[in-house]
Length: 172
Ligand code: PRP
Image (cartoon, rainbow, N blue to C red):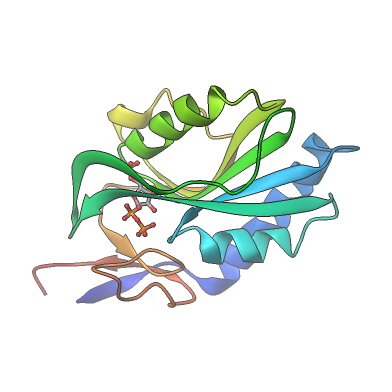
């Protein structure tokens, strides 16, 4: 069951305000192609993009890397982008960086398509040795290894629409 709120709606909103200012500064004079990684990133992406002054286009791709509460170690591109990213400033949006497998694969895949730049925005990054060297350019919060749900993150498709991030405790 849901054990406790880890990051409140208010803290998320305040951090998104800060991230939007950072992104506007970093991309001054440019146009961003925001790439949402379906499905979990949708809540983070839309709430953050509404705060930006920088012109932005949006596209989505979908990958699969999880089953239940544990990472499978597998990566599957379920749906590709509909845009050509060559020459564009691509900003990937993720809800959570867990092992980092998904983003490593995506950086490799999208990097071959000649974007002008390729950066990452993530709401959450787990503090794990596996992802320590993965560059997250715009990061909301670093969290522990607990399984979390809400604000896009699911447990077998449930809880994505919680407006906060909560810890899921399988023993309760
Ligand atoms: C989750 C999450 C990231 C990825 C992170 O996606 O949204 O994309 O796993 O894990 P990793 O760093 O270990 O690769 P998931 O496959 O559960 O799909 P979803 O976004 O539809 O929930």
